[in-house]
Length: 474
Ligand code: BGP
Image (cartoon, rainbow, N blue to C red):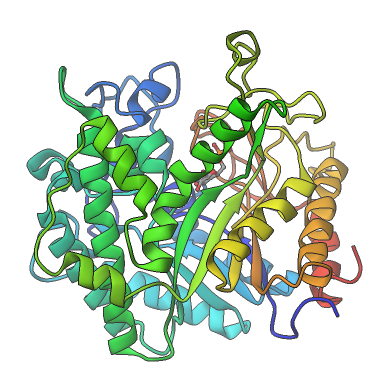
């Protein structure tokens, strides 16, 4: 009983939220660099209008973040001290191909990640690499319209060939697109998309999604060709939908909402466009242009495992009055009266994690990997700089218990768990440092000031003990 002996415990980050060094080592500008903090952020990440710029008036968090670009050795040593078996990170596309469409990669970028992976292996840490985590070179956004353009598949394929070959033997676990369903909810952040006035946004989103799905299947194919040991996963922003009431219309709406997100994984894991999606696209007036060979590629190169992020369950209702009370994140959700919420209104539902795991495992019958979960909170260091984050320990303890129940009591096959933001980093939603997830405190504020000093929080030793007991000692 309990977690498998080779269970991959660890933590997760994304390049644009921690690296900084946005113009160092030959790195090119990416969509994530032009999203400032402040009021306009939401409109920009949701692609509502072309509002991005790169000026001196705003603060752009991705420019400096927590400067892991220069601190990675220190940070990985701390992960090693906690006993991490894996570290999930992402490759910044524009470090490898600064513009995205070059024929030859940037050696300095390749070398940076090679050094980083070697550093991980010093501590017995297996890297888990997200090929793109909310990033797209700005040149591809401006010249090609990002993922709406089929040429992106070729550029992504080129990126994959280069990194799979270069990091053969150093990296075994790959994720093709972070939270692939985010293209529907935050299209500029997720896929570099913004919409011109009058444009059929649904058409653009689903055409772009098709390109990403084909690119993902191609990546899976190439990864297996380059090294049969490679394991490739899809990645879903998950969270089961509950009907607000047992009214059949509410239950139906919950099923439809789940499908809207499962659609992506249905294609990546089962290899076909599901019937319900084809009908729904027809109703939306969306016509996906496909090329010969697309469907065969999707069919033949399905993923090896299903990874997902889980922060909360979601609730839907058909009652307009109920719909007025919404919870605080990018996914439309009604407030669940049975649950507490984080300071950002994200509702806390550990059992929802078990429900989500069961739902995914029932549907796909492939191993699962939880690659994001955690509590964003305001941490206040005491006079010695120490943060006693019992609230975070409590959140993680309950979620790990739920995940253990899914394994022990429901028989779910789970490969590993990487909590989100294992070291404090910039929030994707708000762009702030104030919203922290880490076991390690970083002295950095919302405007980018601070010494960057790293300090272990109370949760650091707690997580160390969770890992050393393989999840028995919570
Ligand atoms: C997920 C993203 C992460 C991360 C996390 C927490 O959607 O994959 O990049 O940031 O959410 O969200 P936030 O940073 O807004 O608190």
